[in-house]
Image 1 (cartoon, rainbow, N blue to C red):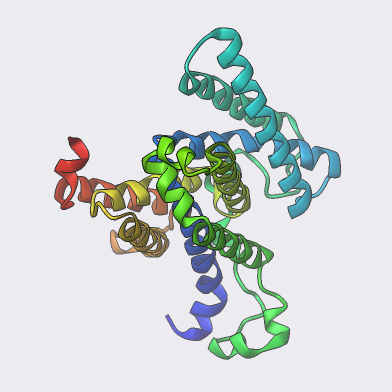
Image 2: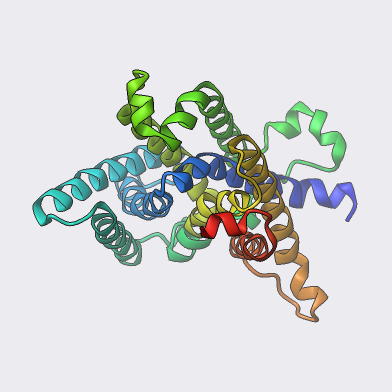
Length: 305
């Protein structure tokens, strides 16, 4: 594929997929190590009704109302989880399972009963996202990267995810030491004067921001996969947290790149005529990478022990 074809048709969806994958994988490392990996799953489910309600109130698919709607839904879910846990006297994991499945089902019902035919907001979009359509129509080749008029036509999802990825990287860099200590020994972190409760909430909030930003572009399936698969695969490669984070970034980038290529060209290589969902293929590739590291990763025995 020449630059005249690659830049307008594939560059932006590929970058958006990579940015979304890394933004979810970075906080996913700490969630996996804290045995809170399902929080990423829960967040990607509970934001759906908030996004749908924001659309019904505003009548438009715009970023900030949907971000606020998703944030409101996340807040409601936290209150419900805590209420169910306290009133029902059940463990947090069970309360999370009840709340996020119920809220996701409610979001799907709202989508099906709402008039969303004029916008790209439906059940399939919520699950698989809209990655293939995020093309750069104003680009005509690599020289468009230096053309101000062409750059003005970049999909807004690209800049939004770039900002969120930068925010996630800064959060990880600034709070690296307290995150590291509190993840492995919360009691010791408290002895050192660290406010582990606030740090845990901040980690969940940064994961929620990444999930909401990625949700519109790539859908809930890839968000769930990226929170868990790259960090879990990276954990099977090393016992060092720093190297684990680096491996997770490599696996996330590899999943997004190979998944996008296989979704577009894989069916053609096998004699088919139509491409498949890029988000679904990216999630599938991340699962294959996790399976390979589970079989051949140098730390697989330590993980099992």
